[in-house]
Amino acid sequence: MDLRPSPIAGQWYAGDARTLGAEVDSYLAAAGAVKADGDIVALIAPHAGYRYSGAVAGHAFAATRGLRRRSSPSSGPCTIRWRALC
Image (cartoon, rainbow, N blue to C red; front, side):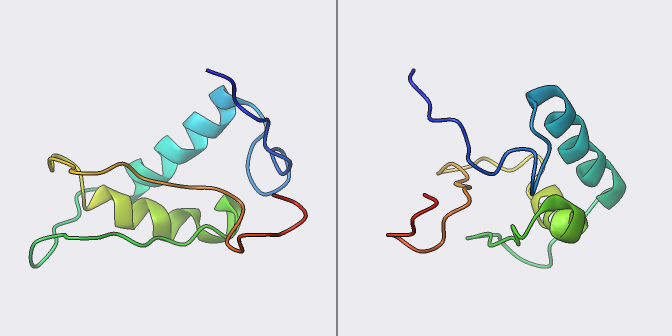
């Protein structure tokens, strides 16, 4: 698979996969056991940079542990379709 390197790796989040994975795992672990009051039909989590929003995103995704997913998470630096950085 041909993947384009992220233009913001190392700025808003760790630049290498091992460090990034450990950081994400730490946010999920810190969230502990999270129980939703009802069915989870969608999840919108912050993505402003893990140092700013990682704990909140970890808490949100921790609520989905053990659930069967019908779609895949999507994540990326671009929230505007035609931005020069994308």
